[in-house]
Image (cartoon, rainbow, N blue to C red; front, top):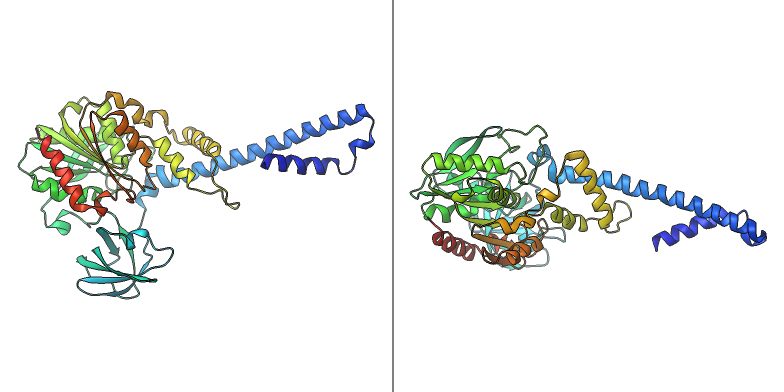
Length: 418
């Protein structure tokens, strides 16, 4: 329809000074061919401008949002929810149409502000412009009325000692690019747990699982990998979604085995899930993995980008971003940034996996599409125990049902301790 409108406009402009009907038949045919040729050239130029310029623009967006290590390291909380009142046990938050849905959604959520961190849980009451929830201060000072706060789905702050009173050590393991700082929580089991965070570049992704792992006696290594804050940077400083980072995980597994572990259980979150999956496919240490827990794993980066692009609009005109433009942007990204789309589809190699997997997925995830977890569960029902959470967004399955999540994970890990 849009091309027909453009064609009509071009035809009108090019024929407004000469009417083809006023010419002899041969001249009329010649004129129409000339008009068609010029119109095709104009359309080709418009297509080049649209796909070339648009593809370049959206490849820049992909770089900023998903590939640049520097951009990911610079992420800061967005404080946007005003506090209306606070006591030792409850907090009142002002709400509006722009308030994050988690503020009025059941479950347990972290609440952060520049001078402190707490948790909100039970919803006591909801009005047109506010919500009152149970509140627990974990660290720092209470927020004051009028101060703006942010929701944090990690739910726990700073480090294991502050969050849970669990002692931990800062250790470093040697990997392909240098030394990688990590947190180590001692335990009594000969099976270690290793947590692998997502592209938010924070070890806190694994905090929600830590009490269960600790209670089971598993020594736990919460690792960093290349391009994390404080970790070695790759030459490109680009996130590769497991294509290269699996080697850092392999080094962490080697560290665990050298320090008393007989086997390991891997926990991967978002991009960390892709790292874990590619480790299972690539590493000669995969046989030492007793089981895997994945939460919203990014196992097909191409589908993830397609999904996120489908939620975007074209600048200025506000129309949905067409898949054809996304395809061009991805092609340009492969040329500019070396994104290996086919190699980042770990689902295509799912038949090579042989490790038991507990898979959590929020069905309202706006970052990693649930269809990729669906596909993994469908392709390998012999390996995958699949747990879905209706309504939950990215890495929010625990937040919605903390006790159920913990119980399922505990039973799964107990069943696969070596």
